[in-house]
Each structure stands twice: as structure tokens, then as C-alpha cells.
Image (cartoon, rainbow, N blue to C red; front, side, top):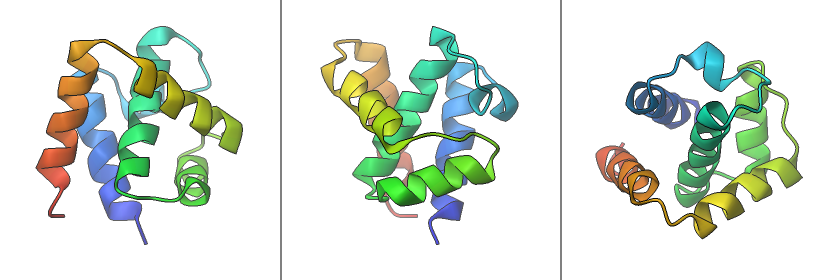
Length: 99
């Protein structure tokens, strides 16, 4: 049900972060890829998309993730003081708020 908005978020985050969908959904733990994943979890949760739905949407894109990992990513974003991260989040949420 939330597939369309999830894909809008994915495409926006990938474009803004200069990464591909394949990189976003890869199992690498590189910081340049994990932070965009955390941002994706965060904006989805703010939508609100339930954690179980986020897990399912991630899995449908080839990335298996646990609830704990999603919670961890959301918490990392919550603790972030990086203004660029927050600017990207605000832009993403505002851009797709009415979708």
C-alpha cells in the first residue's frame, strides 16, 4: 500500500546523495550508504509507515533488515547534528507531503 511513496522517497534520497538504488539496497556498511538508508527509515517512519511495512518494502528491494536495525537507524538520525542531513529530510518530507 505504501509502495508508491516509498519509491518516491528512495528515488529522491538516491538522487540527493548521489547513489544508485542498487547501492542503497546493497549490504555494504559504508557510511556513504548507511546514512541514506537511515534517512529512508526516518522519513518513512514520519509518514507514518509502520516498521513492519518498511521491512517488507526493503525486502522487496533485496535488502533484508531487522526491526532493531531500523530502530537503530532512526535513532542515529534523531541524534544527528548534521544540518545537511536535516535539510535533506525536511526537503523530502515537504516535497512528498501531499502525495
